Image (tube, rainbow, N blue to C red):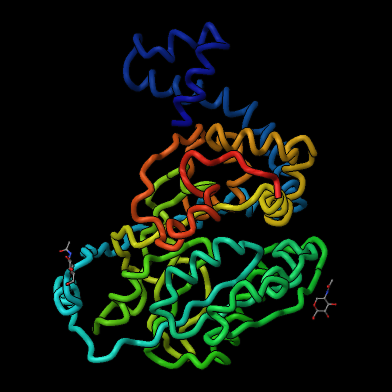
Length: 389
Ligand SMILES: *[C@@H]1O[C@H](CO)[C@@H](O)[C@H](O)[C@H]1NC(C)=O
Ligand SMILES: *[C@@H]1O[C@H](CO)[C@@H](O)[C@H](O)[C@H]1NC(C)=O
């Protein structure tokens, strides 16, 4: 490839070289010699210049902006390395549990496993409400950790604590933890994130998790279907670690992106081994419409998220944060937002850089969302425009 690059440059710039490089004259030996020369001629100038000037500059830039560079590369190295072992997933409403387990090659248990749902909470109150109602019938203990610091070290309110009364229904099964941020300036956000995840590991122990309990590891907005969790808790011999394939929505359930979200995982807990981390753990991957992953929030939440999780320099211009503009852009199909969202959402997909078409299928969405359609109308197709809250 590179040779070809020099080759064509050479053709463009140098008439004498052209004939030779065209490769229509001369013996093979002469030809390859000339080609070498030809390549070297291009090589000399460019490569030398590059080595002497370009390389030091690049190294310097990487040194200074190391953090941003890792961000830039993040989508690449966070892609799941191939290949997962892909398992089929069977589900229909009226199939008995014994049969469901059997279809997957598993045995049905006499009693279900205990299920722990653990999340790091930021500010997604509505989505948390939907999540906990979806999983509620199958979850033994909800575990929630929040911090007064964002991953980027900005101060943030304790949104859950302030709204805890809205989650009365979960109170008897809730282990809540709050951890103070470290507020280190200029640090890579991954450090704060890891710090919070380690704390969540501790909180799980406090919640009383023991070996062979099921642990759901996913972001608040990655919601597995209740029936999927129900199946896993009722069957024996399920994989130790299972990644769920979730449908990926952007901004609301109107904008379906793809069904390639794989980050949510279900673990059979092993003390000392299982760690709350949010990356690929193992090979099994369930080919399932096992739930939804949506980034869905009010405009102000959205601005908060962009400030908190993306890199401040990218949203330097307050114009981009004008609520009216954001609303408009979103409702036309989140086009330029994909750039913003790259930083917060791209972990889960290689999002196309075009407008995302509306979807009008709202089948298989979390039941509670549909029950409460009046309250959560803004999450449903055709209801994008909303009050800036
Ligand atoms: C599912 O089972 C319930 C109760 O057994 C029954 O009333 C219902 O008709 C069944 N639904 C379908 C689609 O078979
Ligand atoms: C964050 O929480 C910790 C622990 O409660 C507290 O010591 C600290 O003052 C808080 N920081 C801010 C900025 O609120």
